[in-house]
Image (cartoon, rainbow, N blue to C red; front, side):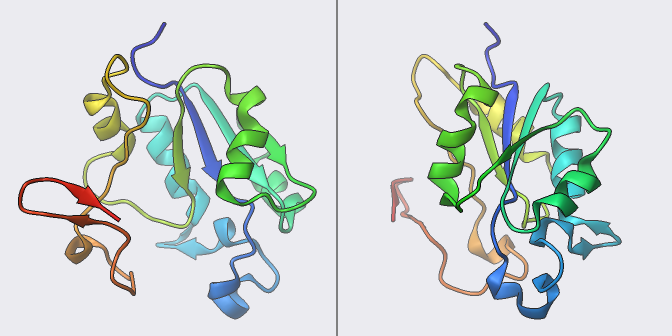
Length: 159
């Protein structure tokens, strides 16, 4: 058994409603950022981390996502009805396998260290069922809001 996950679920099924007209005729993962579709930035992270099994869920304008990913070693998990994050992951579990998996949203562009490699380095399967990677809100670019978690001075995380 591999010590760190070798499967990745890329979430790409959503409607991209908050993107307004940008997603009227294309799915959010195909919106170009820095000259390339968002999903390609996520795929770079997976490739650099050596992930062997990549599953991408689809729902909104799935043919466009499928066409963009054609010819790559990627498995698609289509959702006839939108299943949201947890439901999409559960639906894709038969494609991901029984071992732990990484998950990654396709609508975030990471800079700096590879987040999957960072998670892999911290992963202790004998002690953990899950591991969440976060960055301080002040380091997040383009994020509007308060953030989802609070880290106190003792290192305790609350939501």
